[in-house]
Amino acid sequence: MTATDQTFDTFNALLIGEIAAVETYSQVIDKFDAAAIDTALDRIRADHQENVLELRKFISNSALEPASGSGTWSGIQETLQIADALLGESPVLKNLQAGEELGISQYENALANADVSEAAKAIIKCTLLPALSGHLIDLQQRRDRTE
Figure 1 (cartoon, helix red, strand yellow):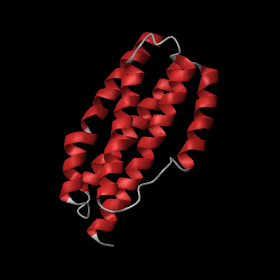
Figure 2 (tube, one colour):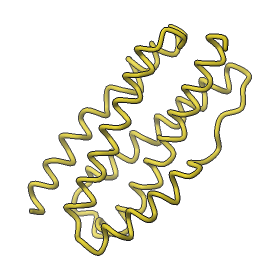
Figure 3 (cartoon, rainbow, N blue to C red):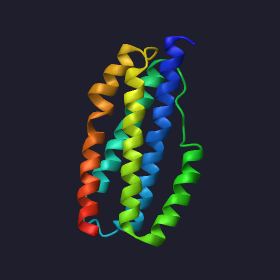
């Protein structure tokens, strides 16, 4: 596999995760944030939407076809959301935090992968990864208010 292939595969995997994040936050906002009391969830979803755009742009600029959906993640996320809705907001926020941690680790793995291009790593470091650690703080603060 060439570096270009590895970069494309890595970015498409990251794109699928980001699409799933956008879908998940949309479901959570609809379920728990209808009154728009707290804009943190909206900000987090917007960050993931920006990451989707950046990943698609990078892949498209490489003359490759970006993923168009979240694949199997969508069904898994829907199942989790239904189960969590029965338990209340705090478990949902805990799952969102776990999702953010998974996303961070996927970006860190891409940075550690010698076969991912330096141009792709620069986008991860400068654009895609920085907001995610802030998401963990926002979600924990919201959990602290709901418990």
